[in-house]
Image 1 (tube, rainbow, N blue to C red):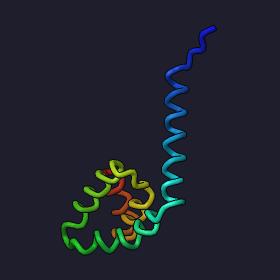
Image 2 (image 1 turned 90 degrees about the horizontal axis):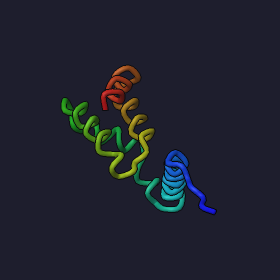
Image 3 (image 1 turned 30 degrees about the vertical axis):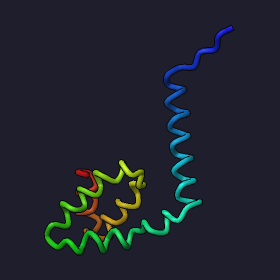
Image 4 (image 1 turned 120 degrees about the horizontal axis):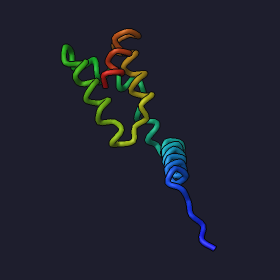
Length: 92
């Protein structure tokens, strides 16, 4: 008897494993201590007029390093306000 697993099931299990590993990474290591919205805001605003471009660059590169998007989204809201933060987040 051969058991076959659908491609959709494998994708779901992979996504679930990815989420669990990321949560574990931020809960059981010191990584969560270093990535805070306030620090992202200060880094973005220190760029002056280039801050929106820096924010877009950070927002584009962050998934490569498995940085949760909500942290950068909150940083964008703090740095640029609700309206511009939303606009830049959608573009990013």
